[in-house]
Image 1 (tube, helix red, strand yellow):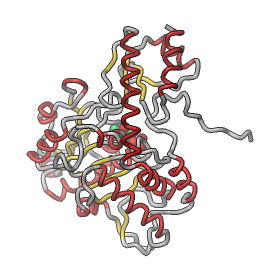
Image 2: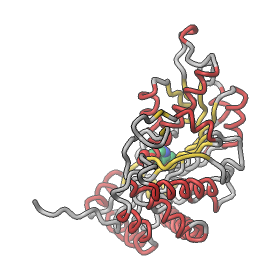
Image 3: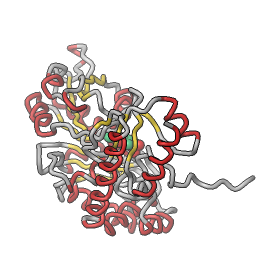
Image 4: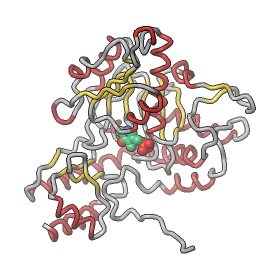
Length: 361
Ligand SMILES: *Cc1c(COP(=O)(O)O)cnc(C)c1O
């Protein structure tokens, strides 16, 4: 068998993953063969997971948050919806067979496709509301979709396509009025938002659960997502008895899971929170602003980068020509080119990209 080499990052412009920090890579290798799903046997990695959750809590404005390191944002979102569904059912009306209603989740149209998976797996209906101004959720339109079978209202802090931050306090108000849980998906944006003035985290609004992924802007190795809950009683909705393990219960969806992601997340945050992430956030945002200006000068329609993510309406022929010369780029559902200014995307890389753009124009 020919030895395969991994994709190198120098031309990767539309990925939400990046090269792990060297300390994160080393920790991932070191803990590859540990299993945080069995904390009584693998005690060190279990300690690292507690440390990682505590730092994630600090980043998300709630150092006392409960949580665990998931396989990614998908698992975190699914588990948050599971908590909401089970809370809603214990609480009474939602999805009550007597009223024949199917429990539902209300989210903006910009919500990540992982919620479709969550809804399918959990037997929930996903109701998505058209966006308001500037690609952001409109809480009034969302309110029209809420009814007595609603179990969760979701806001996005750093949307996948345009990097937008929904009005989280208004969305939590909506959840409170409806008496349901409020979940915030900050899978991608969570490691950038602390250095902005947006309201997005536990300290800014009455959020119940939140997704924040170390394996995206946190510069940890894959797989390392994060689920945080305001209280351990909320997280305990997920606890399943574990008869043949020494530990009494397990909240994660996966059983055996690699300690690589957990150790890597702990190492990356130990290295980078807060100063390293702040410097990275400033650098990435400056790169995104530079690229947006470069597109604008060339006459393309650009979506202003609120977070370090630039979308522009390149013609298909130019997009294809850029892919042809090796740029790993992708489009939004409406066909806009989408460049995610991850830590590996340097100004030099963007200059080379714009030079190629000028050649294919
Ligand atoms: C990437 C992303 C997810 C999914 O996370 P995975 O780690 O790919 O499972 C969910 N929500 C948002 C907003 C994302 O950007």
